Every structure is written in C-alpha cells, then in structure tokens.
Length: 363
Ligand code: 13P
Ligand code: SF4
Image (cartoon, rainbow, N blue to C red; front, side, top):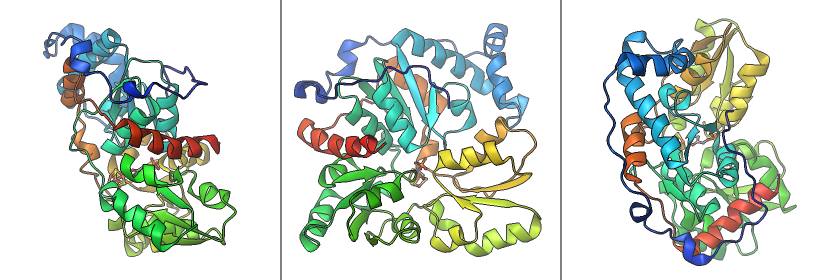
C-alpha cells in the first residue's frame, strides 16, 4: 500500500457548518487545461511510471495515458490533493496517479488520516461519501457522480427503520457499501475485512447484517451468531459459479483459488481462501502461489500481476461497470475544475460518521 500523507487526527469533532462544505469552485480557481500531447518531455517524466504497469499494459497504449498521468500528478501538487484509489481501479490509475490504494477499510482509515486539502476518490460513490464523513472539513471529489454500486442501491434508510421495528433490540450492521442514509440508521459499519469481528463484537445471539446476502451467508458460516440478512447482492461477484471454479481447477492443475466474500457461498466453498481485496492481495504476496485465480473484479488481477513475479494469473474477467466509470480524463477534470464535490447533510453525516467511527474504533 502506498501512502503519501499520514497525519492522524485525534480530534474528530468538527463544526457542523463545515459539514456541507463551502462551494469548492469559489475556494479554488479553475486550473488552465494542460496540453495532452505525448511529447518527449512527457515521455521522460512518466517513464518510471510506465515501468510499474509494463507487465500488464502494451507499450503502444502508454502514449494515450502518459499525458493524463503527468497532468494529474502536476495538478495534485498544485491543489495539495491526494487520490485514494480502490484495488479495483485500472492499472494506470492504481499504479500511476494514486497516492494511497487499498480495500474499503484501508481507504476509510487513510481518508481519516489525510492532511490534503482535497481528496479525489478513485472508487464508487459510497467510498467518496465515506471519505467525506471522515473529513467533513475537506473537499472530497468524485470524478463521476454516476459511479454507484448494486449493493448500496439495494437498500434505503426506510428499509433499515422497518427492520429495526420488526426486530427490536437486534443490533444492525451496515456494510460500508451503503449510502450515508443507511449508515446513519445502523449501529455500526463493517467491511469485508472485519465483518466477522463486528458481528461478534456485540456478544449478541442475533444480529442484522445488511445489505449483502452473500457476505452475510459467508460470515454466518464462521460464527454461532444468527445473522438476519437483506436481499442485496454485488452484481459482479454474484455472477461467479462453483462450476466455473471447478472448470478452472480442472484446466489449471495446482491452481489456488481465492474468492471475495461477496461471492455466493458455494463459490467460497470451492475456494482455498476468502477475504477482502486487501487480504487477497496479501495472500498472493505472502504465499506466492505458482498459479492463482482471483475470484473478484477484473482489474485487481492486473494490479497485482503488474507488481508480481513468479505467479501465473488465471483471469475470469468480471468488470464492475461502476468502478470503470472512473478514468484518467475524469480525474483530471475533477482536479482542474474541483468537481464533483461530495456533500452530506450535516445531521445525517454526524449519525453516519458515528457508525463508521465505531467500526474504526474496533481496531
Ligand atoms: P473490499 O472492501 O474488500 O475492497 O470490497 C469492496 C467492494 O466493493 C468489493 O466489491
Ligand atoms: Fe459494488 Fe460490486 Fe462494484 Fe464492489 S464490485 S462497487 S460491491 S457493484
């Protein structure tokens, strides 16, 4: 994980009037649009960055990316901005312009520790919203407001209130892949890397865990706590099937299969390991399998393959259409115009932040 700015705040109380953000455009003048030609100067300035992706990107593609990479890195310095990128971002974003990369939990913690004036979220909307919750005084930008998530869209605050009325006294855990409105109604958040710990943290016999029915089933298989689930699903991970994994195993002897816990239970059952995107990357780094299948979003295998030697990556390619909305041209546009700013209603934000903070405080 690359981290450029690590200033941890002890104090998490911010004046409410800052929560909605002062209109970014009035605080930051628009930057001049840089030339986007692939000149010898651009080539020289970005050669070390191309080396990071050379294993997964043909040289013929680099002249299209390099001018944006240089312009974005220049604009970041000018703006005192950082780019937080999820592990599913494409290699030219993940390896060439991101300051910090990670899974949802790592990104939330890095957002809380950032000393930048502007955070550009290389990820989907709920991730940008989480960064804003943890940085109410900062400008948080999303390069594409349409970058959603099938899980976040599967449930609203009113659904959570109805569940609370139906199951009085049962703790409610909201996966971080939810809107601020849903987080505000929950008791605590979780991510794929700490879901089991959060479920068991209440010492209760029963909890509600929403909105991913597959994550809930995968956690339920590891605990005695009864989990009441919602009906949401990740449109990327639910497409994987156990038969597909068994076919890959038959075609590739010695294959290690590592699956994200948003996959259906039967897929995790035929895998060697299941964990968050960061845990999956750690598995490859530490176990160094000769052949591996990452049962998750497509770009992650590219990102790990770019920095790994001695491992053959077998690639089923399921793209997240929402993650793929974030591109270099849109990131540059965000930095030049300081748009689109993510804002959250201050009262809602205070309640949603408490759920995220309780999760972070669990350690
Ligand atoms: P991670 O927290 O494991 O990175 O997962 C986020 C996500 O959206 C997976 O689809
Ligand atoms: Fe949402 Fe699935 Fe895309 Fe992750 S991969 S952002 S859970 S739709």
